[in-house]
Amino acid sequence: MRMSLQSNLRDVERDLSDVGRRQLPFAASVALNNTAGDVHKNETRRLSKVFDRPTPFTRKAYAIRRSTKRRLEARVFVKPIQARYLKKQEEGGTRQAPRRAIVVPQKVRVNKYGNLPKGAVKRNLANPKVFSGKPNGSARGAGIYKRQGKKLVKLMSYIPRARYEARLSFRRSAAKTAGHRFPVHLERALIKAFATRRR
Image (tube, one colour):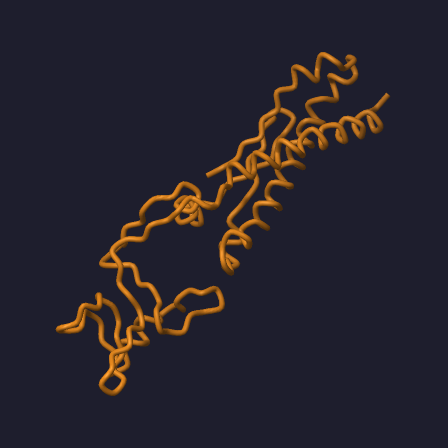
């Protein structure tokens, strides 16, 4: 997943003097990088609005590949590991269990991000009152259960797949930010380039 910002400067170039044309590649590169910075900041902030308590690892999902005056393109992209799970949030779809099943917490303590702590399954199964499977004679699905007297408490559920709705809207939001911010940054960069050029 990525958002590429490329600059087509032909229309701008026609309205500039020879001096302006020489300053344009540098100004465009600065504008692209500043715009990419705005996209990065805005999309990182949006993660906390789209998701409930995203982890620090998720909040560091986005990175920037900067433009140069020889390569007038800047990119805001999702780092490879985070892209594996954020792609489903962007496009929707179904995630199959990597092995036997996806473990979903039910009546078990989760961390402050709403996820199972690392090693939670193993720690719970170490308790002799806890077992994994499907209770005999019960319509309740497979999972991890704890015996509490005559009752069974389902701590975690096993599901074969998880369905995701497209809700991240990274590309649409990033394109909107870029469309608003690039003209502003280009104008500022050109003014600064003219002010600081060597005479």
